[in-house]
Image (cartoon, rainbow, N blue to C red; front, side, top):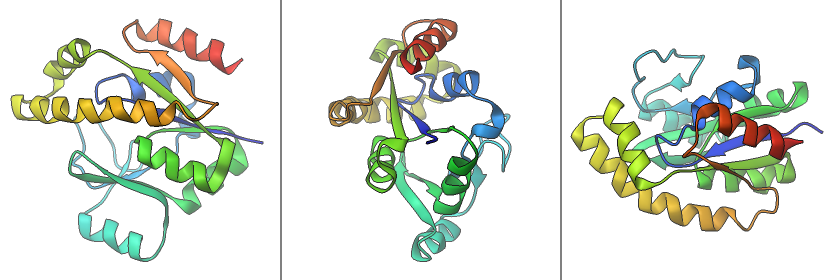
Length: 180
């Protein structure tokens, strides 16, 4: 049985970087989002970037296995995309806690949560490099909610916790150890 490894944690925790190091590009489940692409992101590779109107149409058409709102933007995984990925191999995607819980209800233990834990200080250092002051303040407000989400995830016995305070290579080693 193939699994989908879902990387969860605060913005700036290293979810995407770790996931991309741990898995091959073709294993990524490409999610939909209404947020604007960040520098270097490509539509159809990083996300499917769509309008809120189109996202809501997909919700109405029951096309999502899960969707959530994070930092005022919609994110979601289409049912067809995830089902196709699981037929081929293990897969991965960065996701919210609510997104994981919704997928776990449908797919059970095929969904494996991976929480990346970082301190508020580390979050600030990382986000200062890529965020405006306003965005940094918004993300810090979300950080407290992210910490509450970890308590929700601890109820799942297959939760993998990664120390995001260490280097990316050390995080990768910790993940590989947990998967074996």
